[in-house]
Length: 602
Image (cartoon, rainbow, N blue to C red; front, side):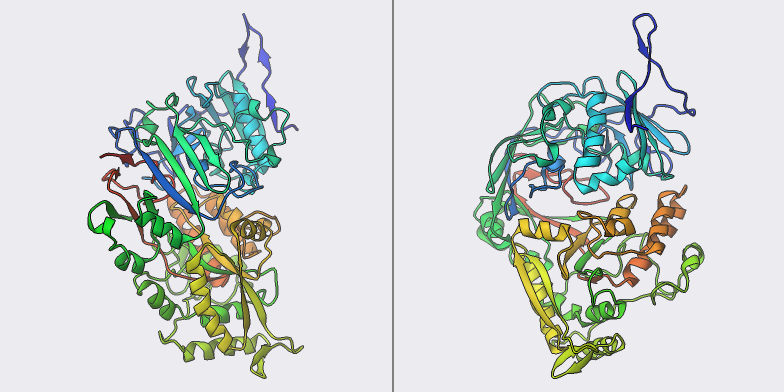
């Protein structure tokens, strides 16, 4: 069966589209993963927006590294990460003040049956691309098929779960799914819509830097210099300026993204007034390095942004596709050898708490101690095949806080011995006499990762493990991590308060064998797959939380990542002219908060 086709026309007095038979459903202005969306149809603006925010002003943001593409929708190239949040739109938009709820953006309404086996969207007649052409059903269908077959890996999973995609009216399109997955109805509303006509006769997947995708968003790429800067200008004819969902958003007239060699150079440029805002991820630097003249005079302001989202996972990930990381005892030993308390105190002043699980800092986190109730019941079918710590509870090993960490290193060496590695001539060797050695792959622009790795490798050297640090540029780093060409590397994966289909992409078994996914660790565990399945088909928030807590146990007990510290507070230093609403979204800071909801005011 073809995945996309146009519904048959019933030619009646000039011709109208015949509506196919379908279960009863009603058009809605929004949809939530569980229950009803919080905002009514006539809401004025999103809760964390200022509908009266003035338009105007220019700001400059900074990235490290370089770029060789302006198409964030294909696998090829290194792209300024901000682009997909500023230039393109989807059928529905997300309210970051709810765990997971969508409201009409390019689509004016959404229809779903109770089982969510299909979803239908009706486009707004006024929706336009930046060149003034209307957004059509044909554009929507082409975008989903093209992204799903030729686009970036992040878009392919959804396409594989669409049975049919059909036009059902002049402005209506219907997705029917081949998988029982209640989140798909929401995910179908969140893919970027591109203009089909732009790519006629062109190879979409091989787009060059000059092939800038046309979008319907508030900004267009007005200028760029390869590897140096990109200029985005607010479209004065932006179609959605008066839409309630967009009120108070995208207020700056111009956003320039400059590129620098590393984060230290970015900070110096900010101090000199060449950059308008930076995000600071180091609590010690935040407390002690913002005493330069522009900060003390009030020209620069420090803003802290609390959030309620899970910690996610940040740390050094081990590639279990390769020995010796395929042995959980080796992974546990390498986690034990990481002197977190000392490293945290040295690099952040001890101000940032450690990540204790993938969903820590939220109600979704695994509870301490043995698995109980619904969580235990979900994991029970896999008992006997689970790693130690899943059912009985797992706690990250603690160091003694000293530089030498003798207790931690003794335990790590004991685990290595259990795994068949013993100390011979000052080196850890296996039964064949092969010495343990591996490489940590790092992006050379991320100086803090290098500082962490330097301290970590000192401990590993004491154990008799030879570790090299491989520093590469951003393009090489992207290519090598996309093909899993590493032993250990830096890993950051953010989590939402409503985890869903992306979990397959992060650590599903299928993703482990596909290039370009986020399953860097190579996790292949039927229990993980089953927990994701259960989470996605949960009918209630309570059932979803139980499945997520069970998943959290499997991930942290899998010992895939050496965890660092978590970021419970966002920190943005910015020029005084940059303002933001007093009401903060529950997700705090992110690429869809600053600069999207900020404005310029002298």
